[in-house]
Each structure stands twice: as structure tokens, then as C-alpha cells.
Amino acid sequence: MIYTNLPALVLATPLLLACLCFAFARRRRVVQWVSLLGGVGWLAMAANLAMQVHAQGTMVTEVGGWDRHYGISFVADPLGAMMVVLAAFIQLAVGLAAHARLDRKAEAFWYHGLTYCLAFGVTGAFLTADLFNLFVWFEVLLIGSFVLMVHGGSDQQLAGGMKYVTLNLISSVMFLAGCGLTYAHTGTLSFVQLAQVGIPDGPAALLVLAFMLKASVVPLAFWMPASYPAAPTYTIALFSALLTKVGCLALLRTLGLLQNEIWFTVLGIGGVLSILVGSFGLIGQANLRRMLAFSSVSQVGYIAIAIALQQPAVVALLIVNHALAKGGLFLVAGEMERLTGQTNYRDMRGLAERSPALTWAFAVLAASLAGLPPTLGFFAKWDWLSTMADRPFLVILGLVGSAATLYGMVDVYLRAFATPGEAQEASSELSRRRQWLMNVGLGSLVVAVVALSSSPVVNDPVREAGAAFKGPLVSTATEEVKP
Amino acid sequence: MDALYAVVVGFLFAIGVYLILQRPLVKLLLGIAVLGNAANLMIFVSSGARRLPPPLIPDGEKVVTTPIADPIAQALILTAIVIGFGVLAFAVVLVHRVHQTSQIDGFDELTEGVGTE
Image 1 (cartoon, rainbow over the protein chains, first blue to last red):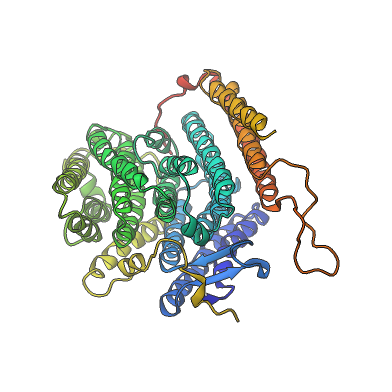
Image 2: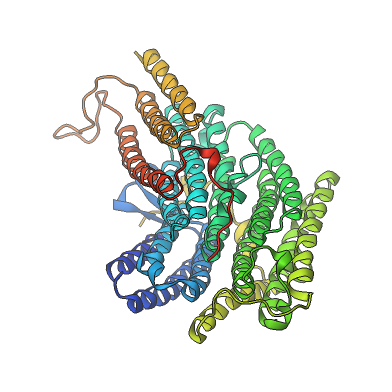
């Protein structure tokens, strides 16, 4: 336990960047440089935080010097710090791709600043140390995501955004009511103190439902395939990589605080249903975006089961793999749509000849998503399966889910990439500079997947960060020495 | 008194859910607003809705010894009200835009469309 301002500084950076982007909104080049250089700086700060947490242990910021059980505080435990690094990396990589695709008008309407607002909320949710602040950070990231969801304002986006906003507002009310009842029953909202008393069943039910909705666990997942595909691919890449993960991490943090262990079973059943619905849902989709959204449902199912069985190391691997692979695949989907002018992947032809680099990116990311060796996804699934070894039903389910994902991905490859055909007309051409930005953004996600693929064998930062997670953020107060 | 508040909160939640289940988008908005208020009122009641002095430490003492009103619940409600207000304002504009662009007023009429860039 170290008391330092570092977590708060890492948290404040995206807010500062958002303000800068808003302040210079009229000057496009300035905003671009602020968001890119700032993104690099933020990633460096987050990495620094994660390394220091790794070396010295959990770091705590107490705002205004108030004891963290009463005041607002930020706690960077190994898992939280790692998630912030992941968020910063995704933000930068997807941000580069967004730079490549955004037109002048969209950029003038504060796109980059809004993504940093979203990142601010996501970081806060990863670092917060009490239940009510978690609610506040959820709202911060939600309002950012609401605006990004309808950014551009096409009919589809408004319709998708309406569903997204409604469902999230309802889950926010459940979360708020759960917070209130928790406070009424226990007299505290700090994670550490709640771990000692336990959250009773009434508020627990509200909280679990709210988080299951945010993480999109079946039966509360159907808003995602209905709303995400309406937004531009660079926005969905950001959402699917980060937002459901915030829900997953909230579930991981709170499930251990509940008095009744039935909620682990509830989440586990939700996970099983998610894998089934996601897997069979994705097979039927002709639209690439919908297919990827259903695949997210199935991947969240794996994460939910790992949370229900209290395997934080597996959760960490699955989250990192899904965030990188799915974020990348949505960018690939955007490029496929742009190059062919089609939205249905069964109508796409000959992409392998036209863009070998895109083909490789798709192959690597899809393999990692499905869990083929030797990718990061394989190690995540392998860990998942080996912790389920004494539950044959879950092993079979996991293999079926992976097989369905693989089937979908191979189908996309065979039809869109491998089938030769006359060159289809691209819906828009990117300038050389924009193409370069897109390549760097997408390439960095692919490189990250490849680089992390070797790490489970050599040394393993992700699994270690997950394994260091010990339920409530920081154990008892006895070992703490305040300066 | 608490029992009365409990009934009121339950009634508000019921109204909110009923309104959300109605077809028009405007009723959906009203339902969300009522639900938010129900949750806020619930937090307020759960901290004990009694007339108590504000949580101030008297001069020359280190701690309060007399019963005081719970400041945390009030801080929670204030925060939740502000957030709820902002989010609701956004939702109102969104419903207005949906109505403007596609002339629909029912949730089921929203298209299942997939966007293009």
C-alpha cells in the first residue's frame, strides 16, 4: 500500500486532453496533434503506473486527505492498472484509425474530445474504490458513449442510439437503487468495508442485474447486437473493446462482496446462455458487424463463467484478448466495407488480392478471437478450459462456442477474402496519409496480439496481474502505514 | 413515516415501469425520469427521513456526540440528481431528433438498421 497521487494523475490526463480538444475544436490540426501526442503520453503514464504497481504494490490516492472509507479515493491494484494500460492502448490505436476515417464535419463536432471523455469515465471505473463512485464513473463514460453513439446523426444511428440510451438508463437506475439500498443496509459504500459486512440479497440482485446488462450477459445482452452495428466501425471498435469490459470488471469486483453465493451461480448460468446465444447468433448473420456483435456476446459468456468460478487470472487474459481482437476486427470490418462498398460479407469478393495486409490482419485477429494456437486467444481459452477440467459440460460448451466462432470467421475468410471476383468499387478512397494512419492503428492492435501471444509462455504480465487480484481492492487496514 | 415513504417509493417505481412499457417514446422518457426520482427518494428515505441537525462539529470538540443527519446519503442524492438531470436532457434531445428525422413515436418502429460510413 503506497499513498501517492499517481493514480489520480493518470485519471486526470484524459480529462485534460478532452478539455484541450474542446478548447481548440475549431482548429482541426491542433486537435489531431493533441489527441495523438496526448494519447501517447497517457499510454506512457498508464504503463508507468502499471509498472510501479507491479514493483511496489497497490497505490492509493485519497482526495483531500480524507480516509478512503469516507472520502473519494482511487486505488490502482495490479488488475486495475493493467486495465488502464489496455484502455489507453486501445484509445490510441482506435483513435489513429478514427483519424483515418473521420471527415472534417465529424471532427469539428468534437469527436476526439468525446472519446477522451469516454476514456476518462472508463479509467475512473477501473480505479475507483467505492460503489457509488463506480456509479458516477459509469455515468461519465455513458454520457460520452451516448454522444459518440449518435455522432453523425444518421437514421440508423439515432434508432440504435435510442435503444442503447434507454437500456443503459434503466440499468443506471437499478445500479443507483442498488447503491442506495446497500448504504441503507450496511452504512458504507467502500469496497473494503463492504467485503467485511457483505451486501444483502436485495441490493445484490439490483447490482448484479445492472452489471450483467452493462457487460451484456444473456438474457440482458440483446441491446448490443441491436444498437452497436448502427455506429461507425471506429466507434464500435472503441465500445466493444472497452465498455463491456467495464461491466465485466464491475462484476468481478462486486460479486465477492455479496453475502449470498447464489449470485455466482446466476452469473454462471448467464454466461452459459451467452455462449450459446452468441455462438448460434453469429452463425446466422450476413452482416459482418452484427456477426461481430454476437461474437462479443459469446466472448462475454466465457468471461462471465470465469468470474463466476472466481478465476481472475483467466478473466484478465480473456478480457485483454477480446478487447484487442474485437477492437481490431471491427476496424478490419470497416476497411472491408470501405473497399467493397458492401455491408453484407457474402457480397464481398476478392479482398485477399486487393489488400494482402488486411487479409493478414483479419487472419491473426480472427484466430485469436476463436482461440487458435499459437495466439493470445488460444492461451486464454486454454486456461479457461483447464480451470473447467472437472466440469465436462462447460468444457464441451467452451469448445462448441470456439468452434462456432471459428466457423463464422472461416466463412468470412472464404467468401470475402478467398473468393476471387471482379474488383468491387470502393465506397471511398483514403488519401495516402489517412491510409498510413489506418495501417498504424490497425497494425498496432495486430502487433499487440502477436506480442502478447508469446508472453504466456515466457513471462506473463496479464495473467500475473489477474492472479494478484484479491477480491476487494486492498485487504485489511492493518498492514497500511500512512506517511 | 418510513412506511409511508416506502409505499410512495414503490408507487413511483410502479409508475415508472408502467410508463416505460408504453409505446410512445415521450412516455418512455417520462418513465425514466420517474424511475430516477424514485431511486433518489429511496436513498433519501433509507438514510432515515427524520428532522435532525446538520452534521457540524460543535466549537471546541473533536467529534459529534448528538444525533445528526446523515450527510453521505444527501451527497449521494445530490450527485445522482445532477447526473440524472444531464442524462435526461440528452435523452429528451435524442427523442426529439428521432422524431424529427424519421417521424416515428414508437419504440418498436425503430429500424433494425446497420450503419454505413
